[in-house]
Image 1 (cartoon, helix red, strand yellow):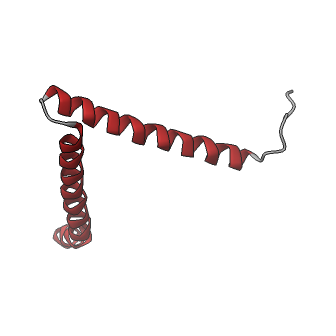
Image 2 (cartoon, one colour; image 1 turned 135 degrees about the vertical axis):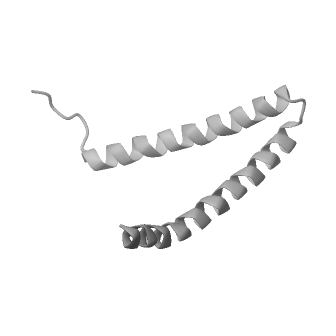
Length: 80
């Protein structure tokens, strides 16, 4: 079959590539927010600040929903 050129373990290679994709996604998200802000005639800093505020709201809503989920599932199981 094939031979491995480097001495790196497959786990290390996968972790490295996953980290690179994470960085790429973060950069592309910032670029997207800046472009959307410019389309709506806002400066880049205002667009990024609004994105940060909406993300914080989304995170708090999600965490609230996750805290309620176990209680709701228990209530649903009692009905059945």
